[in-house]
Image 1 (tube, helix red, strand yellow):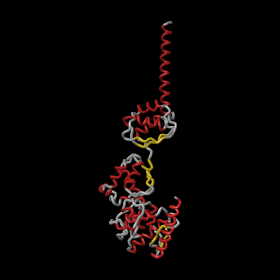
Image 2: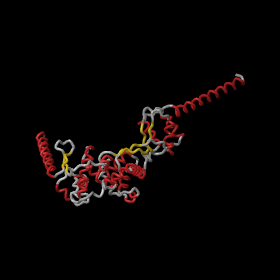
Image 3: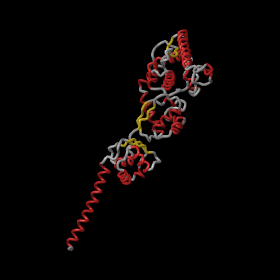
Image 4: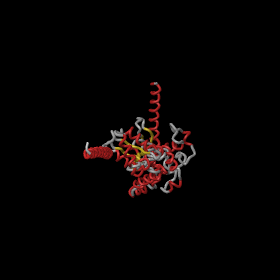
Length: 349
């Protein structure tokens, strides 16, 4: 083989090698940057103490990584191990590897929906609801709910803090701090108390906090929303007449909601929340009332009802009365039905 032929052959080999390497580089670039690398959508939670390998494993299990090597390459390229940010990330099945790597490095979180709903009667249950949905630990929330200095900055105390919280769905980042969360609650509280609602409270001769107190009692009395304005009217009638409110939910609050049934012996508990013993409103809300309960107190039904008791139909509704005589008739009807029902249950066993 001549020298010229050898040179040509060598050049050809080099060209092929370069083309091969170039093809590999271009191919990897295309795969890493343009090609979907997951089989399904996935919500990825990255905690502060997680390693890059744990994130890779989570993606493999949850999102079904198609080309693990591609993910590893982009993680190295973006230095994910050192620069990833904690957060809640939505990984779309159509995402290429590089997008996920960049998402983690630049903290492109998707907001989390924090829902506060249902019956919230204790600080512990409130802290748990928040902790179960956000990165922040429920213990930190519980501590904040009892921190006088912290709550003072929002205009509340550990005793009346239930009034700050409005059941709703709040959209915020999963990594929100305790302060971020309380700032959001205060923002919603301020938005709720429009000039119109403040005027309605004044028309009822109540402060905003007193509205929350009455609303919490209404909330504790019924699960039927259509009854809220009626029951609110009952308690406001009693309050304006200077009567004791005699609200069973306040007794339950005195016993940390551990009573199965309120009996006469429970009515003597010495607590400012015992509305059978002390006239006027309790010092603070006994639970977290809904916006509907708050609005019911601001817009109560106008009637002469002073009394009410459970309906003998056992449908969760109540019978209302203006006079004590009428009330006792309704009460006897209920207790008669209850006795019959209990006997039937006992006979069926």
